Length: 253
Image (tube, rainbow, N blue to C red; front, side):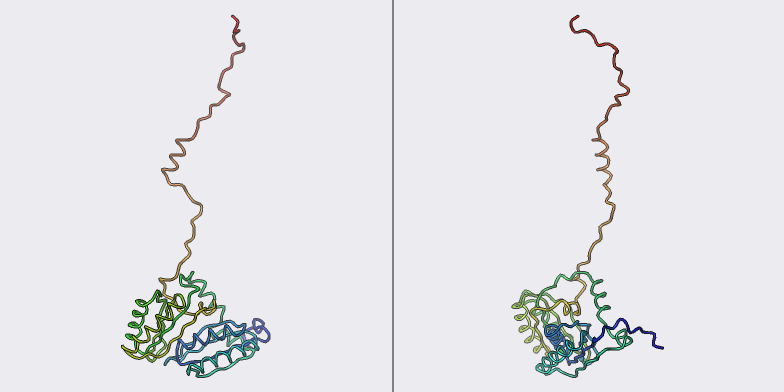
């Protein structure tokens, strides 16, 4: 008997997968899928030699629209490898694949990114030296930040930068020339307005993560402050200890 319950799978749900030959291409493909239909980006699978697959989830009609839109974009880039739609996936399949609840939990544990809500630029080279040289040139040419880098096999490395759209576009152009000078430029991508789902799936270096600092309760006063409070405390006399004369003296006498 199958130990996985069927109940958590919504009726009419589906998984959509689109595969490309580079990491910048799969990020651009995922961006198009998210913006073309009401779907959730589950994550990426990097299977070596630069091959990357974006996995989305939603109802069947939305997934179908998103997969077609993403595949069209990947084909225009000359990067499309394959695509498929899995209608009503079995629970066992969803447990094994990188499903969205695991991704959301991981993203929540990472803290707040200081580079959120910025345009994204991706530049992929074949060879690590070309990527490092291109990243250095991009940082020196415009007001952008190096968010992280991604390695997808077969010598392919992707530098991911963040900043304002104009700065990212300028930096990518400079980085392309530097990458070609040093080694081999493989792919580039600029995403002006990334959605939150896309941001959650992209790698980001730990230096850009702002961790929440818990406040220790109760708050205790420092010792000098305690002593000051004790010194400033007023002494209130005990009126029961004050003797009152039985007869008051006559002022006329």
